[in-house]
Amino acid sequence: MTGGWRSLLRLIAVQGTWNYERMLGVGMGYAAEPLLKDLQTVDPVRHGEAVVRSTEFFNCNPNLAGLALGATVRAEYEAVPGAQIARLRTALCSPLGALGDQLFWAGLVPALVGAAVVGAVLGAGWWAIAGLLLLYNAVRIGTGVWALRTGFDAGMRIAGAISGSWIPRAVERIGPVAGFAVGTAIALSAGWYLEGFGWAGAAGALAVAATGAAVTRWFGPAFTTVRFALLAIGLLAFFRWVGL
Amino acid sequence: MAIVLCRVDDRLIHGQVVIGWGQPLGIDLIVLVDDQVAASSWEQDLYRMAVSPGIEVRFMTTAEASAQMGEWQANGRRALILTGDLDTMAALHAANPTIVHRINLGGVHHRPGRRERLPYLYLTDEELRQLVALEARGAEVTAQDLPTSPLVSLKALG
Amino acid sequence: MTELSPLSAVLLLLWGTIVALDLVSVPQAMLSRPLVAGTVAGWLAGDMEAGLRVGVLLELFALDVLPIGAVRYPDYGPATVAAAALAAGAPWEFGLGLSAALALVLSVIGGWSLQVVRRFNARAIQHRAAALAAGETAAIRRLQYGGLLRDAARGVALTAIGLALAWLLANHLRLDRPTAVGLTLVTVGSGLAAGMSGAVRSAGRGARLRWLAVGVATGILLAVLR
Image (cartoon, rainbow over all chains, first blue to last red; front, side):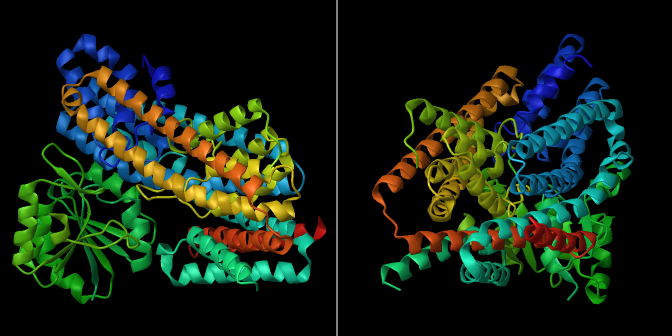
């Protein structure tokens, strides 16, 4: 796999041209270029078609994009019919988005961030920040290397390679860990912020929290917590202004 | 009623469908109607992986779905019917106009000749005319990518 | 806000830009998490503790965001950098609320600026559609660098606006103590609501929800024992 390391580096910026028209398409094309280079000498016509396909609409979790990149590049080298490669790309958006978002955005990130908040509140300072950055990036870089290799080895047999891999199991296990870490972080930071304000102040802040949780739940996701916060700030400013 | 959403989305099954609509609507069955996917087991394997364990996915051709739709409407499951293109949804409407009455445009993406109507909706003028004709035949066509985003009528897309 | 030397101001601007780029474009290394962005910014502004206080609070808001598919979300990174600069040098009980309010407004502007960059990216792609259809790799590279440049410009502008607003607030707004403390309590309360509703939404109804409850109990215990 010549160009593998350069493609891997370029995958770090796979969302560099994020847009609603092709989403990660152009970023995928950018990352595919070094891997497709050898095809140019073997079969220039095929290379041209492969480059065009590589930039078309694509969307998935950026940390698992290597699976799609590796599999489609392998298929291009094996001269799989173009229409089938296009279908493979489309079909891969589904599991790579769903599994990747659950594993990273809803799993590993809240788990590590929650742990880092707990560490920071308990006085670990820079160690908490460094631990978060080192651990997260070790996992995501390791996953990136694995993804590109696994995708390239599997080619059109990518479905089996994903379902038989560690990913689905990791998705199941990370959820409870993330829940525990986030729960601990929220409760601990509540105490950390409110301990200095006396009972009345703490009760007031918790009342705001309860109202916010209830109101945003009642109105559904259209009324976001940021909107609630801005509204609460506005109300406070208004009451202070009229002299309450 | 058991068929709770008829959606056109060329990404087929993905996060917006499973989490965005599936959770609030309490979907427990996704019927993916696509003649090509129905004939391709490796594609089915990939789409199945994107769905959480509580939801069943069935893959059908347009003909199979048209024939069995009345049955799902009658049983107690909450089903989402998903097609990847407008033609398939139009065919389902033609077969069962009362069941496939409200059609949700959830994602039709860029292709040469298509023009942006909404960030998630690109249509050629011909496709827009096709949708207007569908409404003339009694369907109710609206665009909405997520339950939390505004509902856009076909007229507003022109 | 502490008196910033020209060097610290430039470093803050640079850090805000890196943080803005990190969220979506590159390197997605979690530098844009408010906890990281805020603590580093506080240290640059001469008060790491204030940066940490701001960072943890904005982190509670950020826990309510799931960047799935094409959803729109606030950008808390550069907002936290500006807020940490504003909070630096004052007792956090009085400075945190106003800083968090500034960050929340900036985060909404930041989210909107992401949409703008995405639209410009789409326009650039339409502009080069013929080259892409012809398989020109040079066009792909140029589009990619253009996208990164646009996002970097977004980061510079957003951080600069944030730091300017922080300076204005620090020099022209005098809050009495009850208002300042009230703002802190209201923003902390809202942050707890955001963190909790995000956590509950992600938890579903299974094992994760139970572990969330165990976590909350553990957190209360730790807060009492600390």
